[in-house]
Image (cartoon, rainbow, N blue to C red; front, side, top):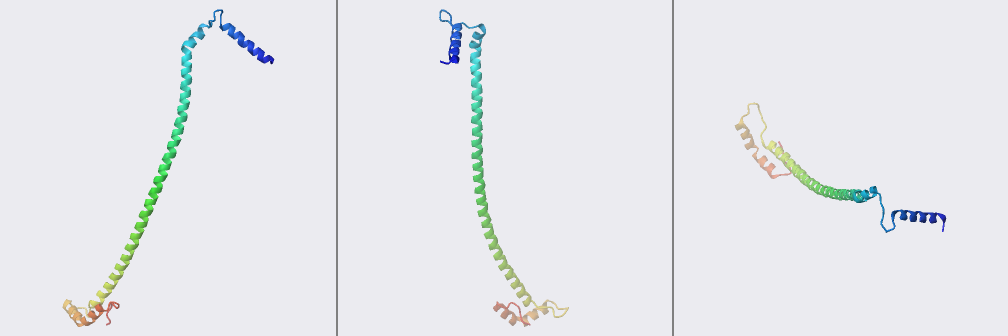
Length: 160
């Protein structure tokens, strides 16, 4: 056996001899007795508090990270859902706008045709002192041309 092992065994044997008396009782100093009776539980409690604090901090950090990842995943899913919903709404509005634009163009063309037709039907002032009855006389004189113009939808203006 190495010498260090022998010396270590001797030290352990000597310290045991000091603690144990002839009758097998352990002799302790008053400080050791007070520490073991009061401080041992307090020291054990302090160690347990430190360990539980450390464990709770680790659990809290883990749960916080888990909560953050779940919250981010839910937020990302909600963002994607809203993007999809907005995209569908946008396409619907685009389609409505195209339809409205088409109808507006048709209405505009019809209004232009109607205005052109109305201008061709209404009499033009022939003289500065022309009144309503003179204008109606002119409409009656060109009534045949007006009817022809209304029948012929391809040519909205009168030939004068």
